[in-house]
Image 1 (cartoon, helix red, strand yellow):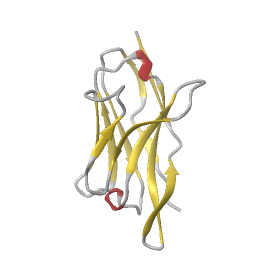
Image 2: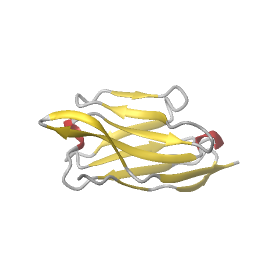
Image 3: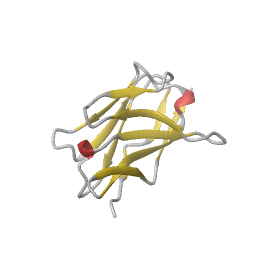
Length: 120
């Protein structure tokens, strides 16, 4: 069972930056689609950014131009660099990765989440 472990969350003032990391021992992020999601209080979990096996990235409109999803060269860690943070970015951020079953990309696996709080 692959465990996804996020780190890098915290509190920052509006306009600041944070970089989230996700590690998954024994898992290669580049083998399947991976993503970052977030969930704010009393709201549904939403996709923030994703990166396909091809390296193609996509972002929600609310973070486009401010956030960057990436993998390290060994594809053992995934990152979310967040710049120009806004109060509305406050949420629990989750690392998500597709599991691999019988050699195919399957359902999503989730980390435990890391809190990001942006104050005005």
